[in-house]
Image (cartoon, rainbow, N blue to C red):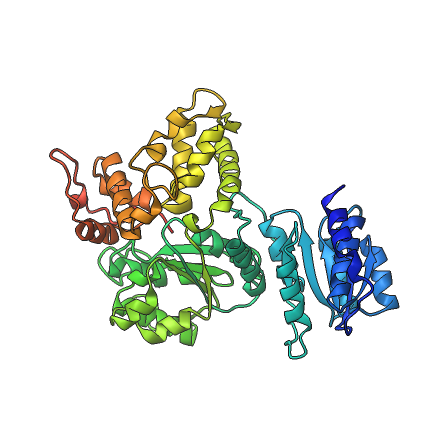
Length: 487
């Protein structure tokens, strides 16, 4: 007996005791048993419920009796739920729609939210989650939904994956705000994938055909950053032998991603505030300002509110940046995403390295799920890339990730070092130390691995009291301030 039939039997007795009707719901799903189970449950909760098993059948049923809420499955034979969603919204503009699916797909989530769905629930359906969502949507004081314009998402090697509740909320928020010009602030630790969120927001919006221009606010000294951001005229300063367009000019009609926004100097904060307020900037040496309609997406791995309280960041700029905030949780808080991430990263690295890794041993996967990942998804990617480079066959084995499985590696559970015995500061300090040791204290390489700027790495070294061993290379005097990857 399948699960659906067991659920059906368990709630069969509720059919005869019908509470006061609270609204009409139409379920469109090709899985007849699941439809019937949901119908019985929702009837027991006081809703009138009808079923259909295809998009066309659902449209006909909706014409016959206008539902208040549609529960629409995404994957069905013939016309999919995603294909039918615009038809339902065009024909019945006031119809509330919840999408359901057994698949975890960022692009589908974004597309569904952009085309008017109000929520997106994965199978197996959490009944409490469904009940709460329906209650919120059909509550008497519920606010009307606002439709967003259709924009086909583009899938490429930078697509995010994740089935955790936190990542589902990230995908939903991207879908809701992508077509709006509002400023977005992305927060989260280094290595969580903030630039991927920024790129996904750009691709899913009306500016997808425009340029996506990224700039790391901590990678350059102030005078070079101003030129890079706003451009300069010929002769504006020594070495300015020709006119140079800045990133804001290049991002016109597109999006500009300002990474590590918390590292901006007070002078640059003031200049950026003017751009956000006036939609104009002045290149160095120019006599007149230039207009820009570039959408600003910023990211930070520091607490900007704390920086404001400390007087290190302008309060007015902070509020201009955080019109919409998307928070990316650290990997240790969404371990259920690790298996999907591993599969996606291995596929991507195989393509990049022309490798042939097709499997990962069970004990390695268990180890990856237990490890605390201070460096988040970036550290996971680096770990897999190193293992695949050294892998002599098609299977990643434990010896290839010995540093992750070692006795001093930070673990969430297990026999090595329980998380309860470690503070977040201890984990971060241990990780910075390991990276510096692995790179023989080459700060440029360490910055690349950690995804931080040189100034931030220096502060971390000082904070954790780390000192290089005798003979370790110190490249701080080579003048290179640019060895940094974006968060």
